[in-house]
Image (cartoon, rainbow, N blue to C red; front, top):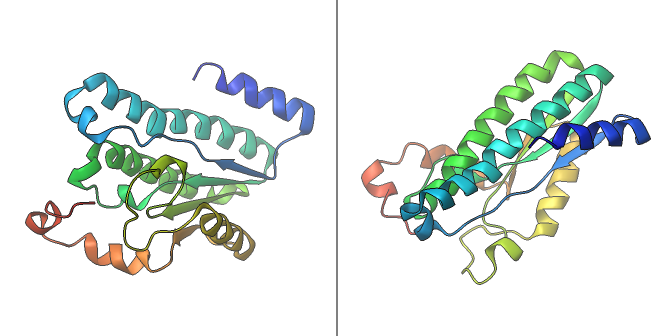
Length: 183
C-alpha cells in the first residue's frame, strides 16, 4: 500500500495522466479456510477491498488534478447480495462496490468518470476447477461489455446484462431462502 502513490506518480511523470485506468485485481481465496482462519479472511479483504480503496483514492486525486480521465473498477455481483458460500469474498466486494459507487458520485463534478463493472461468475484462472454458475461469462465477454460501456458513457455495467434484473429481485429474497443457495 505504501508504494502505490510513488508508482502512480512515476507513471504520471513519465507519461502524463492516464486517459483510462483499469483497476482489476483480486483473490477469491478459500471460503472454507476463511471461515476458520482470521488471517486468511483478512488477506482476502485486504486485497479485494483495502488495496482497492487506497489505489482508487490515489488515482482519483491524480485524475481530479488533471481534470479528466476514467477509472474502470471491477466489482462483482457477489457484493450485491453476499452469499453464505463465499461471504468473506462477497463482503469485500460489497465494500468495494459501495466505495466505487460513492467515489463515482464524488467524482461527477470533476470531469473524471468511473465505470463500475459487475460481472457474475467468470470462467477463468480465478475460478479454475469450479463448475460454472448460471449466467457465467468469459473474460472476453467481460472485456467486450466493458469497452461497450466505456464507449456509450455508462456508469455501470452488469455482465451478462441479465444479472441486473436477477439481482434486483435477489436483493429482496427472504434470508431463509437465500442462505440455501449453493453459490
